[in-house]
Length: 259
Ligand code: 13P
Image (cartoon, rainbow, N blue to C red; front, side):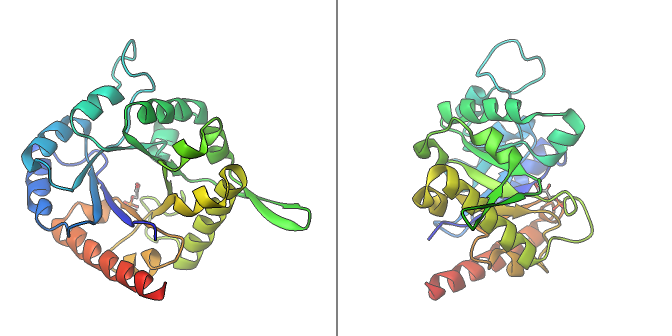
């Protein structure tokens, strides 16, 4: 079974001290063997990692530059992130695309650099699919993902995590329904299978993001093709985040029981 992953995306919230305190409070609450992470502002990442030592809590960056080093004023080097103990990086988040006009080409370069330095890319995608019929079979084409992932080997693809974050749900009042989240995650998996083979597609984790709350998380993450969640506003409060980590564990146990 794919290992579920639950991630807090704090966006541009919490100062260094608040981030460190939250991480310290979380480190003992993360059940052993679970993938739980926090994507905090870049300024806080090093201090968070230093404060929690080798705790399995994942410390995640929200963005990075496309080059390991060099003339990219204002960007954050993936090599430096790796050096600071960052294990994953969000790439191509909807807000990066809308507010900072990030292109698929640029995101693709960032993915390649992250892989080069052993930082796992979590590629966010908000797009609608195109449905095509080939030899009587339905196939799904996701333009953003196809352009970002082209050129990767199946071995590299296995290391990628995808997060489906529909724009109607990010920062909105309502999440996608569990059915919509499941259907789209399944279709993304089919499109990965078309490009990289079924075995790789079965291994890749596909998360959902957009207005996830303690009230709706269970319905979403208990879907067979939804391997976890990326949570914005509802992750800023520690009790709310812990409640979602617990729901997510229950969903995982039920999925295991169903195998
Ligand atoms: P909200 O949970 O606040 O809608 O944000 C979702 C998000 O952007 C996850 O990356």
